[in-house]
Length: 473
Image (cartoon, rainbow, N blue to C red; front, side, top):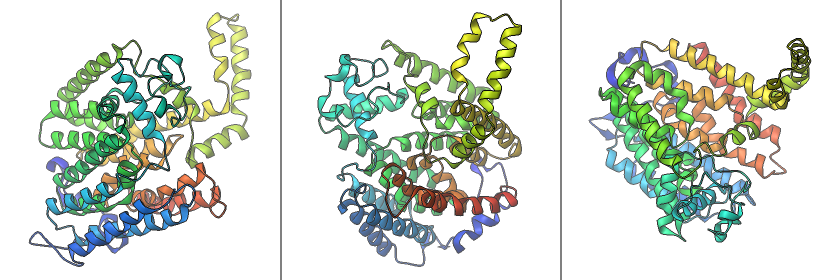
């Protein structure tokens, strides 16, 4: 694979894992596809997504959903192998058809899109969505038809300003904003296919075909209605601008990606190192202007972010293991005893009273993981210093994903385009096993939590260990 920007020779970037994953190799001949007939693959893909669209509520009957998802993930690998030499227009046709097929399916595994629609309706009423939680009487009457479907009504919105602008655009279609938002998210997701293809290299067509066919982006954007694909598209655009030497545009695109969801901030170090002052200035300027504009409504766009960061946890074995270790060692209690001794020596200054609420296990586990993440991000930046930005950004996002207390299936949308280009077996597995996590929200008798974790993270850990032994090659 050619590194973005052509800063590294192809033979130094293409790894054994990229060549060998699942026996997959590019089949290209004069820009035309070989292997299975393209139209047959399109028909097979549409059949699986039509099946997903026709299924009853996946929470009530998860087995058919999981089986069709698995079949679609396998088909995506087959399509990536067979269609790697296809034209961009054909891949966009495939991706567009699959996403359109799921647009009319009501969200059943996640209710987040109703929160997005509610925020958009509040903004359309001239009220900052950061100012009030949905249950606040000041906004509770703005969208009563949506409020009953909104979860965590006591928490202010956590979504950044660019995402909020998209939600506000969806409100123009009220009361059909859920469908409108899903269509906008699906279009953003389809643009990821285009951007991955434009990033080029031997893996460009492979990755674009895999992403076009893969069920995770299709189901989580067009199906469940998550906006992450817009942030992913902006991040990929930033990498493309950087590769073309347009550092200011790269910085602006990066800032807009961060302001869609804060996830890509993890990739700041490698981008700033390569984009230097021009990228940094453009990013900071864009962040400042958009943040200021969003704050004019009377409240900080940080909203309920601190509450999310300190309270939420889901589907993270690393966080669960860290929390168990913190509790087993009684670390908060020992730290508190030490702090009390210091407090007494300092003659009980007033500021020490502010520290006491943080002596609990969940906070200590999060703090330890935050420290580990900071160390990892610096190490990743140093490890890939001589390369283009693509791989260090990928591994930085991966570090954040694995160390964060919360890992919803749609969070893996940030990794899938990079994993597809790198043919990274571990993260391709994780993206394909992601919907199993929904069984942790709505327990399934034949799919207990330990089995979910074993299927999700067992093969992933083995594949990741194999990659690490190769030096992240």
